[in-house]
Image 1 (cartoon, rainbow, N blue to C red):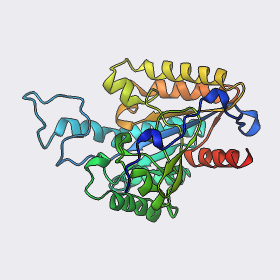
Image 2 (cartoon, one colour; image 1 turned 90 degrees about the vertical axis):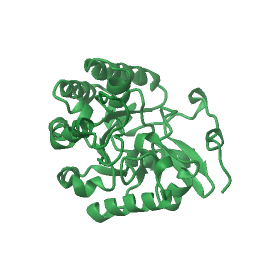
Image 3 (cartoon, helix red, strand yellow; image 1 turned 45 degrees about the horizontal axis):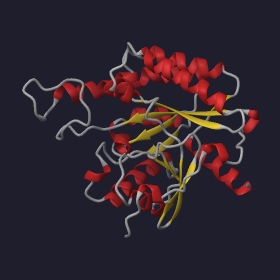
Length: 294
């Protein structure tokens, strides 16, 4: 397969010169919330760490860091779920295929609330390290479809990772959209050797991994940054609608000292004129409908 460089997958398009986009009901900002549910393999080096091993290196088993993540699925998710229930938010569940069985009560809670399930790799492993990428995508797809009865339409690579061929593999597997290309405030079409796939805006900035684990901000930064971003996007959207993603991982924003700030963000957006909550699949369909009408 011919290797396609990232800048060859999409045409440059300045947002200032595009045809205006409209959301239902005159809304200007579409917000979607993505909850990441992952299974960390205790026999491998942990994908992220909160504590550095005292003697250095990457020991296994890494009990402190595995347990730090596990807290999110045992406790943190349920704390966040109360917020989404209180505001009736239609969240999207980006989930490892293996995690559906391991953390089945989480999958059931999402299914009971009609959340959208998004493929997130079979386990939490960089796609470049997966032995057989098409098979990993197939297993993830099958796990979600078997559990929910519906094939997933969206894909989020673990850690936003892709190989050179990931978009082609996703099109072959029947996916309609991907979230890995964080480069726009509106959906865009990515070219592949097998047809196009929609990229739905995701976020690295309003993402708890970046804020809390990499940049080491205080917990309130999540609220402050999200509200500031929403207000700027609402200003930008006076002539054409914008999309904003909010990303949470239960082991991060589900920690007791951080969860209040997720609630405060959702409360602000829920009462803000011009804002609507949606899902990745709905954003993909909206983009396609607008593309066909222009």
